[in-house]
Image (cartoon, rainbow, N blue to C red; front, side):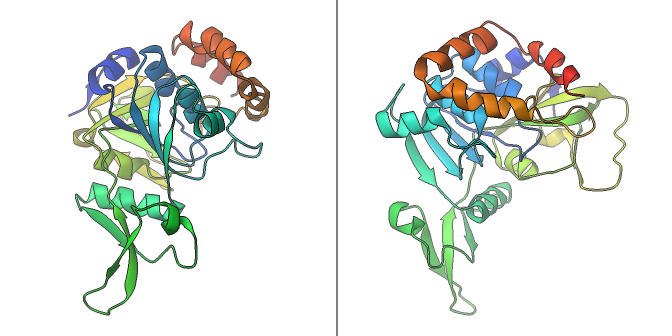
Amino acid sequence: MATLLSLAEAVALHVHDGDVVALEGFTHLIPFAAGHELIRQRRKHLTLVRMTPDLIYDQLIGMGAADRLVFSWGGNPGVGSLHRLRDAVENGWPQPLAIEEHSHAAMANAYEAGAANLPFAAFRGYIGVDLPKVNPRIRTVECPFTGEKLAAIPALRPDVAIIHAQRADRAGNVLLEGIVGVQKQAVLAAKRSIVTVEEVVDRLDAPGYNATILPSWTISSIAVVPGGAYPSYAQGYYRRANSFYKKWDAIARERESFLAWMQQNVIEQGPEAFQSHAAAAR
């Protein structure tokens, strides 16, 4: 059952050096505040898993938190490359980063398999593409009923899944609404989970469209972090800070400017800094 903790307490309790950690969110509800807490607590040797890693993974990688990345497409959406990710892969700074690249469909299916406690995912995919040539974890199986050849990859079973959501109720149930990616599947697949939320309410009232409720028994801990998805957005709470995504390209391009920004805006600040930023984006 979900316990209500501070973000610092939740990360200290559930995330350990060497863990496989998935911070999921698709275009919105990206758990930036939680990622920053991992950096402040100096977590190391993580395997980071995510569909479409963007700025928060650039920051985690640039601060030396990760040894390995399992992903499908990585970049600064609408802007360009992730410079800290590229520097780690191409130059080994601040340390070498191993990568395991998949398609979006493969990642989604692997999370589904993990959530169902299956050892691998089988699906139609990777036909006529080159990824299987460079990723030995992409294999094929034959359907025992039709003889069809299908792609197969190991299930994703993170040690910890971390997501951001709009609301939790006092019983520990969590509501996500708006654009929902694989957050539900990641939580169900993980051994432990942390959900940061905008607020705790007496009752969860879903509007009836594209909403997901995660029951309390699926979640390890909940932390109330208003603005915890900023500079991404939380539907019904604040807008995406498009200007910051543009600014990040220059901030992260050079090692010195990146480290200076991280020291001032992450290391020396706590999650409460997100509240003022998000309030300005309402």
